[in-house]
Image (cartoon, rainbow, N blue to C red; front, side, top):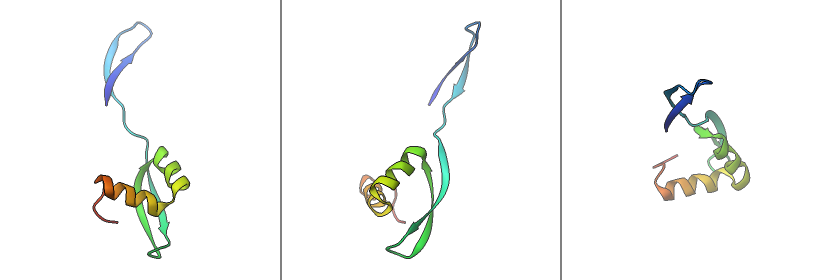
Length: 68
């Protein structure tokens, strides 16, 4: 996503907005292994709430990932 930096004098310069991504290692107890994911802060909260397996199944159903 892109937008403008606006200075005190109202001069506008272009800038980009990047997602807040973290490289995080999660343990998948069903397969007894760790997986590395690049997830946002909201994604980490969703994984903590629903569980890793449910989130991976939902992401696969929506087409975000093909395997894990």
